[in-house]
Image (cartoon, rainbow, N blue to C red):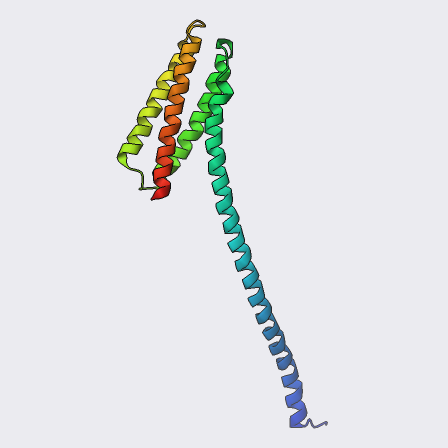
Length: 165
């Protein structure tokens, strides 16, 4: 029978343990590096998201302003396209307004009421669009444009007040 020296046995047992320790120490440093990289990537992604949200808000306002520009020259024969374009723009504004109302307690009752009144006035004008004769089309369209502009201004006031609080 072979006798194993205690030193030899200790070396055989410690060698794998030492290897595991060195691997763990290397992983620990690697994990710290990965955590730091992940933190930096997350921070950068958050900054990009903020920039994108600002661009989206500006883009959304451009869309609201452009909606009228798109239909301003429509004729009575283009009434259906006029109506669908303005309804789509209106629905988008209402969705954004709902988000402002639900996400922010910083919008005063006066500003909310002003938006609701402007919204009702726009809807009333849109109802008249469907009933307008060809002779009354230009006047109806002009008054609808004014109602739209008032609605956009009321929305902007609500958005500005919500963002300032």
